Length: 232
Image (cartoon, rainbow, N blue to C red; front, side, top):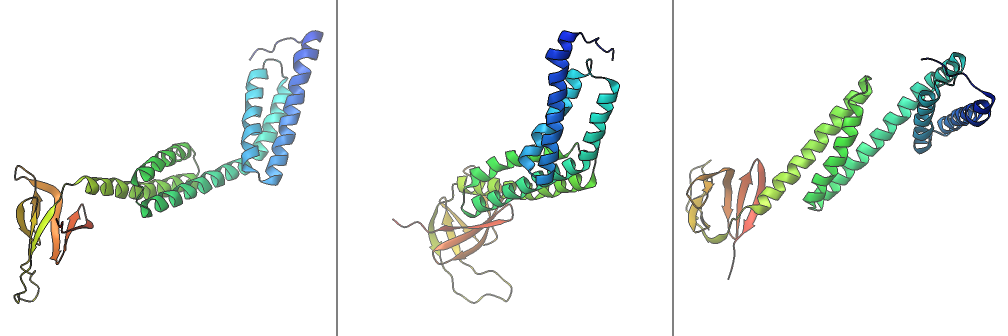
């Protein structure tokens, strides 16, 4: 890069303030690293890189090398703190997703998965093994929570009206299901049957697991849920 000759005016108005900002940025970065302050460290590190880039035509090679050497010495600590910051945020999001799922706030679970995606995308370009492993763990756990929330939403949308249950208490062979019947959406089913839609087509991944007095247990995509008998 061709260096721009500095006039006395440039020295006073541009170069000296630039050097002061570089020095202040390095001091701020060093203090932030000593304090292990995740919020403070990100700002000066990024600002220093920007100052080096924008001020390069005015800075001597010696100054650039010295600043880069200082940044390089801090790079390991910076990466560790940045990793810990992402890790803490990722864990917090997983805990939030788990809480929302437990409280049946399924849309909030799905919403949190978007924040997790941003963290994972931020981790992917890193070339260290720890970042890649963290990305994989966060992605897997977040996907599990999201998939369960989406499945719960689909279950809630299923139109299943249990309007009658016929109990048959006759003795059945060992290992056999009982002969109870349930009237669901004006059709009669027994345990093990796959539920059909209005056109008589089987609803994918939906079957009846168990019929008991007052309740019918269904399974949808490996998730068990119960519908109660509707009384007028």
